[in-house]
Image 1 (spheres, rainbow, N blue to C red):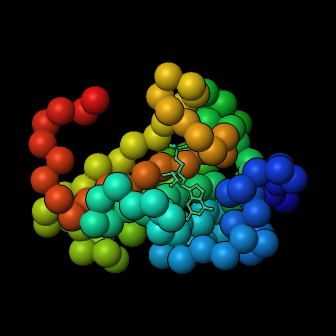
Image 2 (image 1 turned 60 degrees about the vertical axis):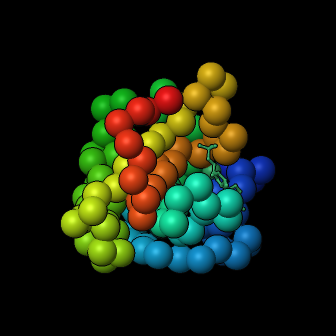
Length: 118
Ligand code: 5GP
Ligand code: ZN
């Protein structure tokens, strides 16, 4: 059973209480277009259970995170991103600029992002 946080925006999106532009879904994860895209393609991939950030990944949910990465590869193929490439980012905590405290992976693509990370 998923564990939802009543006040979490992404939990509300997963439950369908807030509309979103779905890209991919399976039993364990959900992917949708970012409301404020920072690249021509900007997709968020989230687990369907509330995990706050990468700082909460441990042995109990590591398989779920692995599953999300297989979903990311599927989405990249589905969206035609594999030839030119794509970037995957997960912000964790204040210094990283995390604004939504529900684990999510940004898939960014469709422009040359260069070699600089920050
Ligand atoms: P963070 O800054 O936590 O790494 O990323 C949060 C992302 O969620 C931001 O890129 C922001 O634009 C996106 N976001 C915030 N609220 C919503 C929403 O209600 N719907 C969608 N589709 N994206 C959202
Ligand atoms: Zn949540």
